[in-house]
Length: 246
Image (cartoon, rainbow, N blue to C red):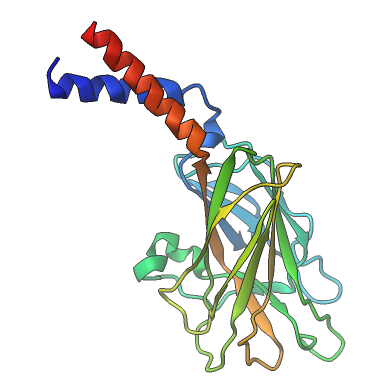
């Protein structure tokens, strides 16, 4: 058998083995936008924040029950705002560049909180932690998260902390102030025994804003199958190759 035929055989085996897994295990990336509506469209998922202040829900309870991937395929994964934002920031960039370019105009708005002082006005609320809970995740996968946030026309540091909690915990920070190109990434988070990963968004240690503003505009989730799953695909390829030789 020629080298080309061997490669083709292995590729076919990999495809066949992958087909045995559920769609969400091998889905394309999942993008989530914090915006003013809730739903799915054009390969994006949206969680809506339509009110703010002491009397508003700040998006609490908004849920996308079956997120889609970039190919608009259902993944079975849900996202819910389980601790509110204060409201919607609409002062982000609509044309990010560099590492943030993949988020397009979805960073133009986003959720914000205010860790250190009420906003707006003297009788409003202080929101020190916002939270999104992801459910129905596959326990044999790990998940990588990339975050983007932007707040233009400011001069202070509004560093935001993104903490992910599953079986393991990790965090990263990003300064949204005048940000048009930077992202922050956490890799290798495993879901807990309930198939969930919790994202907490709050003020970072280097935040110098007097109100303690923090932000989340959009994020990307990538599922990474466990090594044993990848090895199984490789074994499938070798089996086909052996049969072809015989």
